[in-house]
Length: 280
Image: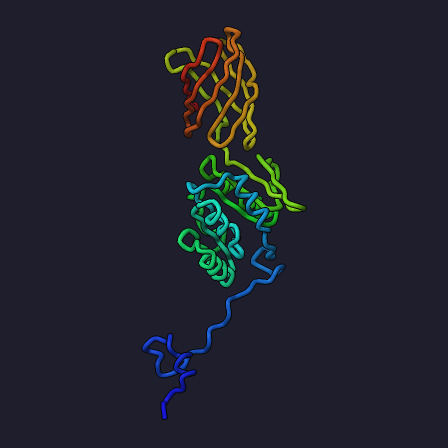
């Protein structure tokens, strides 16, 4: 008579050599989250697939992006970013069971090679490599995250389901049925006084910029004459404005901000000239 029945042998077949003296407890079925269940700071309400796609389209996610979903839940945003848009995607989820469940979902979707969901606290874990950050948090958590997000690389896109960032106005908004999502582009820091000049000229003007998030204004001072900036815009590290020069020619400036320097082009009736500006 055999020592083990065939049923017992099947149940024990996956044990390691060190456990062959006993039979393991059958593995529990996959964790299934419940809509409205409590988390660390929020309850879990999944974002609809339709809104997820619109959020990622709004952020223009592509295969060149690294997407981080803060509070990843069941992983739908990270999985969609990888499966539909080809991005490398990560999720940070406080609940260890939910994080494991989300990674299982990524495996089932065939994108486990592009998606990594880890257990962690979004206020502790690093995500500064992200080019796109997504989240579905409460307003006070958005505001708590805001200083961290504003320090990210200019041009990083931030997308939030349902809740905004207070006085940091959204750059874009999308809706699906009764749900809304907002997007912000992290702006460069351009506040202050700059010395601006045409690269091939020694003539210099003083550029003063006032900034509130991505909203900017200011003035140009040339030969003691101050002119306001017109149509000033800042999106990520790209800045554009117009001003009336002392020669009464309208100049249009477009430039890229590189820390304490800007480089770009000034266009006027006389043509285009390269310009640079240095912050004092």
